[in-house]
Amino acid sequence: MVIGVRMEPELERRLDQLAHQLGKSRSACIREAISQYLLRHGDDGEARRQSQRLADLEPPNWSEQVPDWSDWTA
Image (cartoon, rainbow, N blue to C red):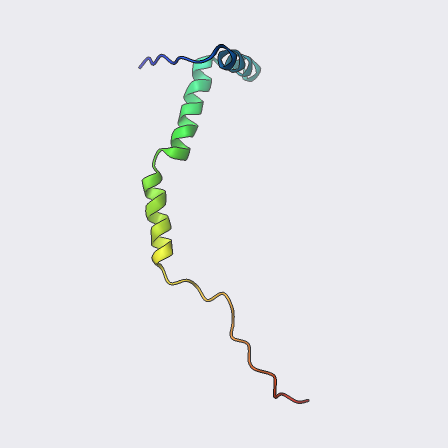
C-alpha cells in the first residue's frame, strides 16, 4: 500500500538526516514510527479493561497489625 504524507520542510530535513544516520530509507523510518505509535496508542481498550479489573479487585493488605505494646513491661 502506498500512502502519501505531507510534512513541513524542517521535519522532512530531520527525517532525511536521521534516516541517513541509521542507514535506512525514509519509508523504513516512517513504517517503524507508525508501528511504535500503534503499539503505544492503538489498543488502549485492552489496557483500560485490565486497569479496571485490577481496580475492582480487593486491595491487598499492605500493613500488618502491630500489637499494642503500651502495657508491656520488661
